[in-house]
Image (tube, rainbow, N blue to C red; front, side, top):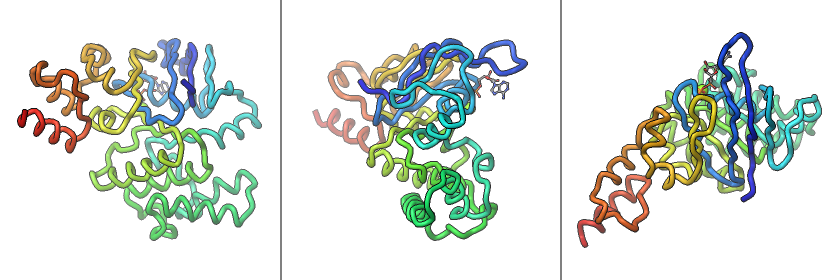
Length: 279
Ligand SMILES: Nc1ncnc2c1ncn2[C@@H]1O[C@H](COP(=O)(O)OP(=O)(O)O)[C@@H](O)[C@H]1O
Ligand SMILES: [Mg+2]
């Protein structure tokens, strides 16, 4: 399998803390996947993401992005910025300028890109994330969902092959969540690898095609959603619950569900039930 991101034995301790936040973390994100990084609060999800984009640097071990080991000089970090982009949990940390249009073009200008290309890319991501109508609205007047999509647009404008998002749907209402996810869907369809740190198990279950379970700074399990969610013990040991649909499915009598793929969204669940009841 080809990997977009791979951690090998990464150890990292924040200054003035006793326990390392990452304790020999090894895990990998398949190229082209939609990967969910799951873990309880403090398990190291955000630290993993910050390491992946070079904001934090391992004290031991190494990190590869699209097959190349990360280096930390200015040139290497600038190059990494074009290959991997992180959307912070809090858009306030990310948005610098007053309007979506200005904010997105600012990042591109920093790369020395020509003005027509900046305009073209801005237009493209504003369209993609449904922000065109509010491109000139002051950022402080935007809703949280719009701010999150603006932050994502700024990352996308760099056209990275790897996009990482830290708790992207937290505090979003269902409509804003749906808009964000549909934007991600289009980006994924265009070939990007997407990594999302979340503790929303229901979201991870229906969205991801690869799961990494973190527990106290190391990888407890990795695999397809079918593999991870059928093994309740791994999740329980990592302090996580089961997604509601998985809990319902795996509570059905085994002779009914045997050999059937566990449905991962409400619509599939309904048709699976209809089949079971009809038979
Ligand atoms: N800036 C920081 N300074 C010191 N410790 C930190 C800092 N950020 C996170 N940590 C610690 O590192 C560990 C991992 O945190 P984090 O990566 O934020 O986990 P998660 O995102 O899964 O909640 C936790 O023990 C947390 O308290
Ligand atoms: Mg976090």
